[in-house]
Image (tube, rainbow, N blue to C red):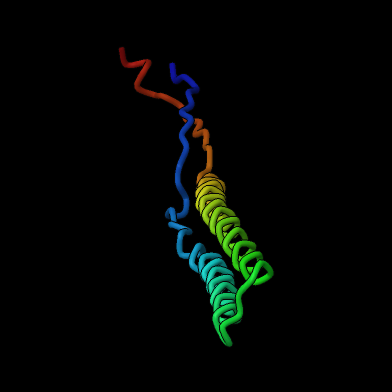
Length: 114
């Protein structure tokens, strides 16, 4: 006597893709921020060195610019790490949507032969 049976599978219906190429646009923005920060620091140094300027105000400006740059570097490094994590999670979410759970129902006519 035939029996009704089923099998459940998960099938990938679309190929996986690496989304890391999206990272470059974010990194370009971070690089531009770092570049502007470096230009600011150079401007402060040049301002202090031109005309033999010195004194507590110039030293304070240079120190503040150095602190700002250190702070910016920490933030930029953290942002890059966060971008990596976000893209990895995005990859996982997109790949999960490219699979489909399926249950196939069929009649097993061979079970009655034994």
